[in-house]
Image (cartoon, rainbow, N blue to C red; front, side, top):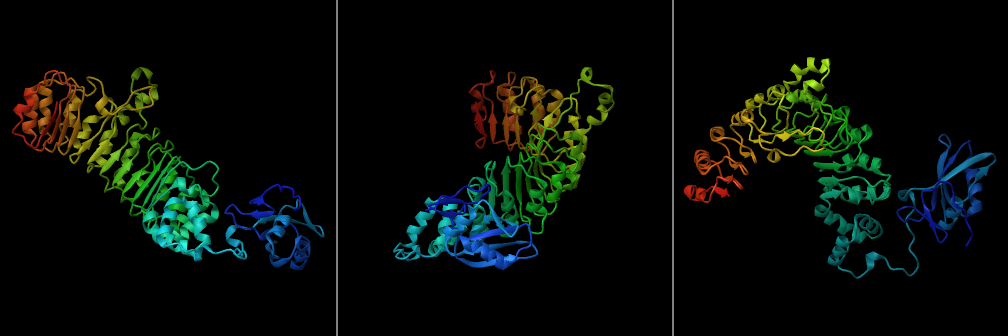
Length: 497
């Protein structure tokens, strides 16, 4: 065994004098790049000193090609030679990719896995046990196992997780796409492994190799314009996606333009992308029905009016977006002059999306909340409290006493299609609570921790709201067990005291 030195750059490793690719494939084919013109015969003469050369492929215009050695040990010796020079021409070597290497030669006396006396059910158990990268490696060496892998992929490969993908080599990715790409319906997960170098290649192959992929959910994966273009805009993009989540993926307004070809997109989740301002919301596919912009802290509320380009939009969630401080003592003259415009954020939203059924917004008392009463189709309303100086926006149900005032309750009472309403820990008087009798579609009402709510008011609400199925009045000091007796005729109503 000779002693060989380590090259400066390598895409292989050596064990017992043999070079292997990252997929544990013996290297016999070596790629060659020259800095000056050189003939094919000169290459044969140069590399013959390392061993028997079987084939030399050479492009004289590109000054690149490959050399196939008879033995893997000969290729390893050539790779580990630090300098390759022939008549003044310098040559650079690297191991050929896995798919460019010749088939492995059977060792004498070694039995192939195809000939082992193992029933297919046993191979199926092996498939369940092995991780994805090991399955692909085994499938490449055993035709019998590959057949079983392809059959089982119809149900095992429907959901693919990024954590599994980050274990794959470049060759593994191609094999996975070839053997089971058509069976992948959902891709999910993130972030990427920090040392995984094949994301660009993976993105390139997704659209052309996964024709049935309809759900994509990435989390904390930084997507560049190159990724967005290959995933969605290119002719081989994922144009059949109906549900798309790109949460915390470092997207900007410009990146949303790449989503235009997704004409079948129904649900879009863009949470926690602080690079979004909202200028391109009107360029989203007009097929979008559900849009989640929660936590996009730089999203300008006045730009929500761009959503008028989405005629099918029924659900909008946008808490924790950018809010201006409307305390006049803290404002400069320019902010004061623009205050009138800022106060019409909700008016613009109501005019742009009058058919909204689900709305989750951040409440700011200086904006024009009364305009929300114009959303006559609203079924679920989830306002959130904005707390200056904190990183979180607690849900409405956690608001302190008096968080929703009489005006706010009047607005809510105009939402005739609302089905679920949570008003915990609010100190409404009896005459104020009676406004809720207008909500004829209400199915769930939670008035827990209300200090002024009595058996009389609770029973009046329950008897008036004919569709009510659940009434929560926990920890209300004026509520007693007698309320259950009063409402015993409402057999379909569940009362939680």
